Image (cartoon, rainbow, N blue to C red; front, side, top):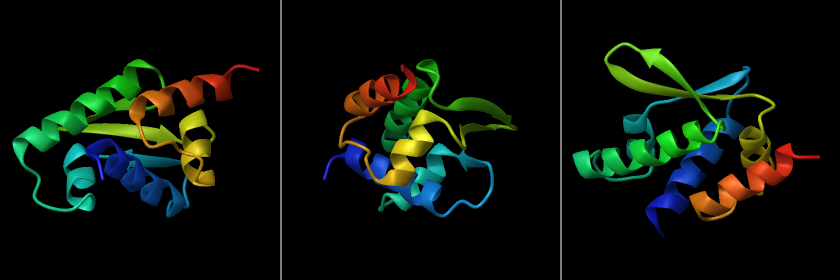
Length: 104
């Protein structure tokens, strides 16, 4: 399995288990959920992908002290795709599907 697929599966797991209105995401938490150790290279790739999702407006950045923190709000296109299990296996496809989901 690729890193992107594992990352999407970890985000899907977080969204499905959430009862509140948002999911808080730390790159290190995702790295540990994906299996293995949280090596700096792995964290930097995860951080890059999360920043890419943030630049597209699918997740929100949040000040988390010295740690980077991102939020997936309930009702966002990304939340809907992850919750319904319709998330594709690559980040580029995920961004494209979310944009299609947003536009009427």
